[in-house]
Length: 317
Image 1 (cartoon, rainbow, N blue to C red):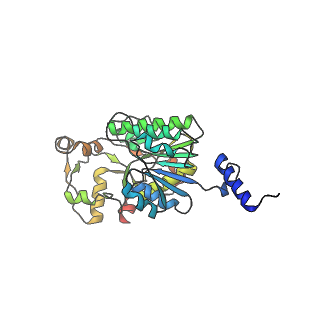
Image 2: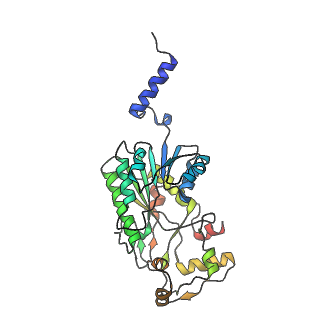
Image 3: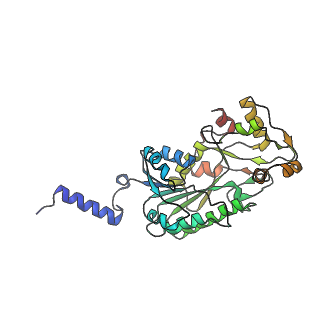
């Protein structure tokens, strides 16, 4: 007896379930992108991909379920601090964006360790993009930082990121998973919480004297989201990418520029000695590292054309 249309449909579904539809042309297979760390940047990534792929996001907050669903994202309740709660992530996605920060303590990134162990339980995604930090370079004394430069983290926060990078690379080398590591400097955007210098300028927080000042780097949140998407499909195996705009400014000059745009007083200047005696440790740590990041690889390999090539363009917008 010849097979009916419903019989063929059931047979096709069973075949897909057992073989992940590998035999089908790619245009008949819908990509499933999993977002780990779906905060401001993760939601921007989702906005770029909505309607083009199936979107999933890990969230530890039941209160975000409705928000994620309303944004066309399938929420998955789980917590990277609880290994048992994320076991079901294995095999779910064809591509993954990992933007979750390490816990704020310890020498390593246990969250990334838990995630990579969970992913190994079943078939791995085709590509994984990890959002790291430019802090892994440490203080470059104003020199240009290219991706081949050895890491030299000066803070525990950055050392945890190096640990995560190492685990991501190891996962890629042990499989066919294409892992891309994005080294990200200061993120800004007018529609991002604390995403502009406006509040700091209103407080009159000081910056360093020109002789003591440090080079700083930036990326607009929208361009960072676009870089994440580009790396998902264009990233090379085990590749590191600096994700920064073309601005080359010292920190004090950046705040002076913003003050002029906002019509606010420029911040007071202080010596490094005074800063050491008066400013909080976290704020001081950002004033202790000077580097100029080179973004050539981002432009040539990821073929990313920045929407906001300078902070002037981004802050004006």
